[in-house]
Length: 161
Image (tube, rainbow, N blue to C red):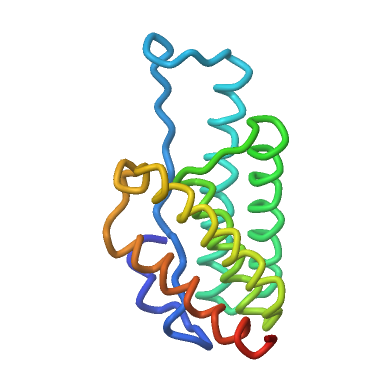
């Protein structure tokens, strides 16, 4: 699906989707991680990558069932990361809640989108507070995209107040 990003129809051209596939390379000599934890980390990366494929395919082909599959896969990946790996805040966690929020936004479920983008905001704030945001390997445009999505949820917060 590389190269089809320019053909993705959107109701809101300002919304950002993290589309890069994630690969996990675990050096067992440098990282103290059991085989079962390594398997869970690798599995969530695979789930995320399949979710991104369905996500982009759903937007390109305008098929809501692909978006629903993507949402289901994002939710499974988030559940594994939260339940089995403990509190994780890294690129994959940011990308999962960002992309889930984008799908909710696409389905016009603004409340659920806002919840996702609020989680994204808390994750970025946590990483920034502890000086970790600059250590996550991502393109500056991706960081800007995450921030843009957080800002999209702000008008809804102001209207609710």
